[in-house]
Length: 52
Image (cartoon, rainbow, N blue to C red):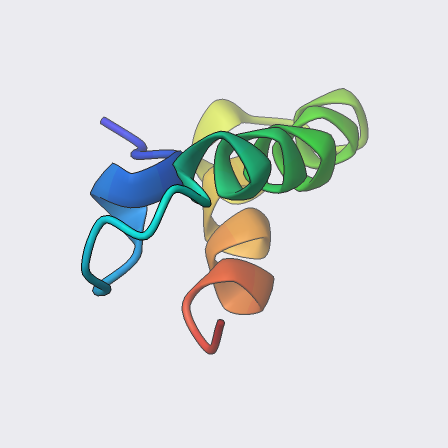
């Protein structure tokens, strides 16, 4: 399972969940398109998402 938006980020609900979900999806989509496996794509995506 991969979480997007508010569910993936440790923060109070400040109304930015949709923005975070769109940004997360925009980063996950090219990772999925450019990786050999879903697992590799998610690991690559999480490397940029987790510090945020």
